[in-house]
Amino acid sequence: CETAHCWAWCLAFLDALATPDVVSFSTAISACGKAGEWRRALEVLSAGYATSSANAVALNASISACEKTSEWQQASLLLRRSQLARLVDSISFSASISACHKSGQWQEALQTFRTSMDGGFWNLMSLNAAISAVGSTSWRLAT
Image 1 (cartoon, rainbow, N blue to C red):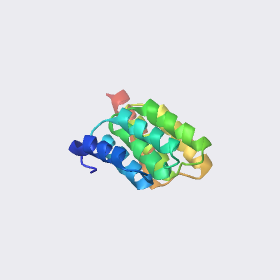
Image 2 (image 1 turned 90 degrees about the vertical axis):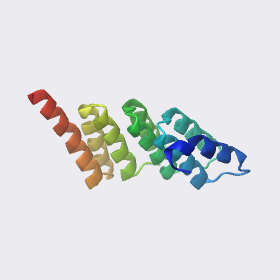
Image 3 (image 1 turned 30 degrees about the vertical axis):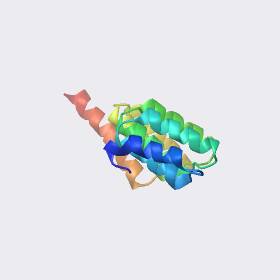
Image 4 (image 1 turned 120 degrees about the horizontal axis):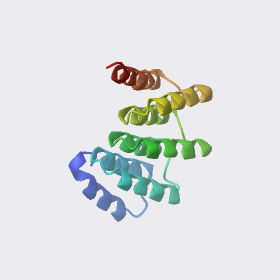
């Protein structure tokens, strides 16, 4: 269900379930993300929140969907909202930093990394993503 061409089928399957669980929601969000359907991924996340079936895995899949399409503002917004709900983890921050990096938003990537450090959520993935964001900008400025 998570292959890029199956996202519509995955959403139909989710709708057909009497009581979808967090795995169903996360899988549907991932499928949408792989197909570049970030808006649909966020719709599924909202439906998951409405039924209390969203958790950090579903959130991270949604941030990753935004990251895949360079929707850094949406990824950052999701991260900030989810910090208030205490759903974030190191993967949340890494995906958001990567979204900023892909969009050339190195300052936002660096600020997000600082926030991850302050909250104890940084890891090597988020550090590498932040370094890559700053590094790719430095090369563009130098040429």
